[in-house]
Length: 249
Image (cartoon, rainbow, N blue to C red; front, side, top):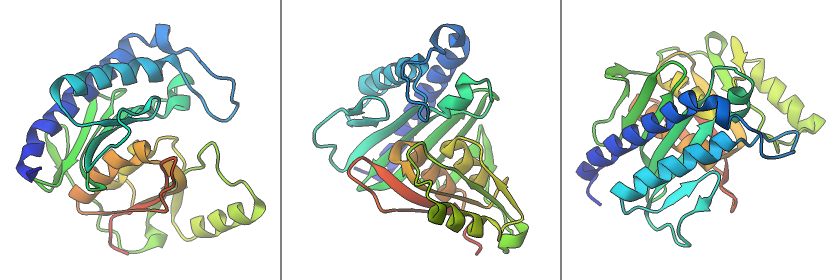
């Protein structure tokens, strides 16, 4: 793959994200239907409908395999380059009318995120970033990470995935880390958290046990905006630990 080829891929991802976002807004009354009974993990008909639309658009215009939240891997061997799709990041927020949710589409090359698109359909805001231009944008305007250099002046965004370790030891460690920062936010969408770091609204997004599809697009956007995106401890089920920051401390 030539890096210059990703321009078309970026435009494809933008188109797929926008079309999916339109579906999630216009058809919400029909697709905001819960499909599972797990008290911790919300799955909606909206997740399925959105993912099917995105996969059909990507498959019609690209030969890359797809790793998606609801359907998993489209190929037994994903190879060196593949799409990573979260059709509705912040499902519980969407279900309960909390307007912090989005569509997230990223592209991985040799396990490195090389482009990402996050569509905040509630606000019609399209975030994007790629390794070719080394720029991140909100719609057509460039965005950059903040210049804050001290944690005590900074905002940390974090979260607790539905299958988090809720032991006293684990929670105490989380609280100790939180106390360093000026403010802490839990917003329920990893992709939106990454975009807030990329656009200087927050300085750090940190979470353990999040899934690859939640964070790949955001990782590309953060890095292209001048920040760092550290992804570690990947498990066979695609769970990872992440620290995205403005790279200033």
